[in-house]
Image (cartoon, rainbow, N blue to C red; front, side, top):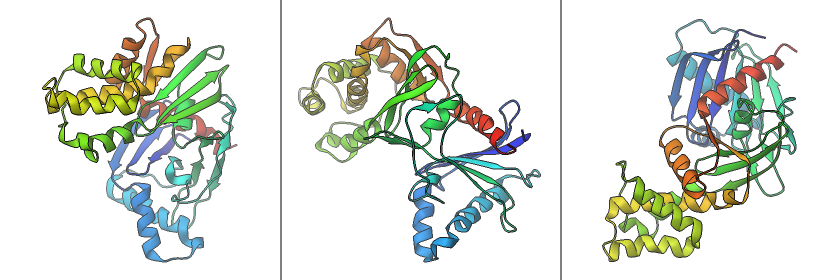
Length: 312
């Protein structure tokens, strides 16, 4: 196995690149930027180049990041890319792998793009997973970085713009669903009539957030969301408190199905989502077992595992 890799999570709106010691998953250097796939794709369309030049175009964008942020010698260090880089707007579209997904065999659709004279890094491009009705790109790679017991039945939750709930049995992902939680919150808070009833709030009002969770669990979302409006009209909550209520509402609605299962919960995320989802899960079921994994660490660990493919 190669000693160092460049681990890249190339999402729709963000770009995260880390130089990593593949033997122990130690991050040696990293950069986070706004060169998301969507922005790069727009530049690609504007360039009006033939499709045969697409990989080279994206590689040039990649090279500009390497030149600007990595001063150490990284010549010939291979790059592992997961996320939206393998989508229709990415550097090269790869078909989704289908369930079941065996975590031990890492049976994802992965393509090697050889180094060239202009771009001296081999690329391992990792595709996503699909069911009949759902897709994911990125979360399937993080799954490889989790330490789930081979005999355990677990529900792995990836909170976010489009949250994912993945059922894992005997070290195999057998089912998943997507929830438009983050996007729904943003639309309601910024584009609907509720935008006049909420104001962004980072203060501590966990009790109000929990009230939103309970409302989301027991009520229809379309009716419950209107209560954000009446909370203001009846002076129950001010705009900042309502912001937390709405956050709890959509998260509680997402998690209401979790009550029907008895699986261990793996929560894969970072930042304030850890506290919010943990509090919501414990509210819905105080006896539930919740194990938290940092999403960035899971991704890096997974890329280190995938680096074994390079010299096979």
